[in-house]
Length: 151
Image (cartoon, rainbow, N blue to C red; front, top):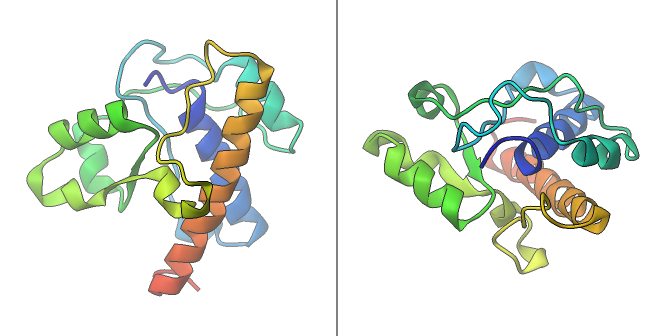
């Protein structure tokens, strides 16, 4: 929602995964929130700390809000939960609605559709988000490979 916990974590995890596979030339990766609560702020320090423990640096990221052009500029718009999915679908031009998916659709073995917001929880919530995001990132990259969009 505010682009300081889940989505920058996903951006950092997927960016690292893509770099580790030497595929970064094929991607433009960005995260954004559906609300303007934290525009310009760095990710939550707890998100940064949990990510840093796994070798992922989020410190250079800054929160921004989804803009109309994102629906045209990006091939995929991945939502973290039902609320954000609904907001994205309702603000997206009809011709781009098929781009909107749940991030956890790429980790069906988790039997979850929503990444929980760790903001009001303890440290374990940030670890759980990282676990989920790592699984979905690997699944997303695999889906792109299987589709032939990347090699």
